[in-house]
Amino acid sequence: MEPTTPRLTPDCTQCFALCCTAFGFTRSADFAIDKPPATPCPNLAGDFSCTIHRSLRARGFAGCTAFDCFGAGQAVSQRLFGGTSWRDDPRSAKDMFAAFKVLRQLHEMLWQLDRAESLAYSPETAREVGQVHSLVQGIAGGSLETVLAADVGSLHESVGAVLREVSEEVRAGYFDPDPRVVRLAPSADLAGADLRGWQLCGADLRGACLIAADLRGTDLTAVDLLGADLRDARLDDADLAGALFLTQAQVAAARGSAATSLPAGIGRPGHWRAAARTAEVP
Image (tube, rainbow, N blue to C red):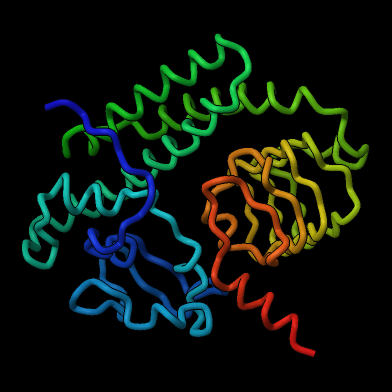
């Protein structure tokens, strides 16, 4: 069977609530309760919908609103398991949940590689990105056995390497960032930092901890944000339209405004709109 081309946007109507079952979570600022993996969330309805979907953040489930499966949920539910749910066939649950955990990572890799292909400058780098993209796509679009046998660690290394090459090419076209940023290595701890007024264009903030960081009004053009933790980061009026490798999940975990500029393909979270309306009230 020829591998399929994965669709990288979620369609919850075609999924058996795999994000609400396969993964576990711990009571924290993101989740109001503890839930072990491979068990249904207590808020899950019989039709696989969420009974508190409209009030997730208010009820302490902000982590749910920031999750993005990159289309892995429907691919597992419909393509790999033929539309038969883990409720209809409990014996399939173990493999279904395992496949979802793998495919979700593969789909995110493909999502980032799609963007890398559009950003690569040199033909050699573009060719390397294309080769890795074909490799990951072949596995992601393969059979259940192929997905479960994937060496995810090795694939992460290959994808990370080509994304780094693309990032370096793009960021090389910018002047040196603010001297305060030069000393910051990837994975820097910037939790709670006030970065307003910093010249960040072209900075490497890959894997940085930006929890509750203040980036209001900041230009983040060509800033590598791959894997950066943006939970509760202040992005009001910031320009992220040209940020590198920013995902919907990162944006959903942050705080922003109607004036925040986002990359093409990234939607403005609903709680941002609510915050904007609230801010207009005297």
